[in-house]
Image (cartoon, rainbow, N blue to C red; front, top):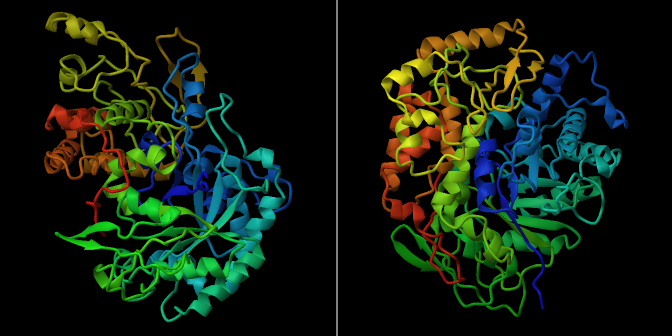
Length: 594
């Protein structure tokens, strides 16, 4: 008998779940649900009003909400196909489908929640989630949402009700836009509305009884939510930092299983402390074996799964748990029998710190025949090609603009004096460890005299390094000039935006000569920091990335070049080593960090 379909989720993480991170993880798994960072609904409303909205009308007609590039950007949405089809007409690319992706919003205002829901649907996200667990002072303090909603249950109910009513008012065809090629299987429940979920914890401050969380979820069910992501530890809004709130309060999986039994009509996803793919599978599908091997520090422990006659909750497991032998008395014991309404599991820090563990999700967790990438070299090649498309080189142009973000609008052009500069040419043309997917250029063969002549020619190549620079809110809609297929020139119309101009001057003064800000470089490199976890060269690779990213001359060659250069300090055998395939018996090597 085929086991029930379960879901594997990658959690929303502040300053981690960026577009670059989600793209990197999507290269590893086509099936996993990847979450965005929390989108603050108030930010969407504010930027909508800045786009010459005299008034935002919250009514049943979804056409009253205009999805402009600014709202799309603040909502964190990115589908490369929509961008490339306009920027590179007639060109073929290795398109990576971003779906399924879930957008999490944060708010305590029903009207803001309604507006954010419309934007989420128009962007094309697969689900929407309300954050009711974030312990950050910026969230739970003045704004009073996140974990504060567990205390202010009336506000939580009104927000969920507003989201549910807004979803029902919009036709399903607005957001169910699968791939016309048939490559995308849209993940929805039986109802044809955008699925709603609430991500919460099992307690907050002094409100940590089973009765309190049952009452809270019961009210949310009545408001229209039937899917919950349970971070199986309580949260402290005072006294602990967000990082400490991810480690100090003990995890309590038996509590979460008991909660599932109390709401059999709802679907649940368990989050917190997942140490490896085998652990995730056993939590999701149940564990019939006698033990689950894990590692904590340098010692080995066994998470014994007591026999309790087939019930979901493991016998003799409670918090503090002596059997699991984990820090702070945490209990991560998988259920003997998976509850029927346990929809799946969610990982966060595992994906951030040890992304290669997710390379076998499609095969091992979902039962696919194969995985998207076979080794780290293949993964890095695809990711570097993506970076070179969205973060073009700035080393060979005379433009004064500074790259502040990704290319999402065709707003200005860069004229490259040469195809490559003297810094990035060594890798691009001489034994490139990661071959560039652009066409071969004649410049690799010319001598210095010919190079001098070539410098006088204003060349703007089209392949993987398009000469397009993102400058949000500083340029108006561009005028596109038809040109030969080898050149793309976009003539921008400058507008006065004092805030952007001041920011540009500040960044230029802070890092003279750097045309790509450090924030852009850090965002692009961050997903790759853990790719060599547990392998030779891990520390060396990370140090080289840091050194190159702080070099003002090298930084202008773009994050793609920096990754290529850093990879050369590690043995080729490491990059070519196949990803380890799971067989259900491998020992976990990862312990979640802060």
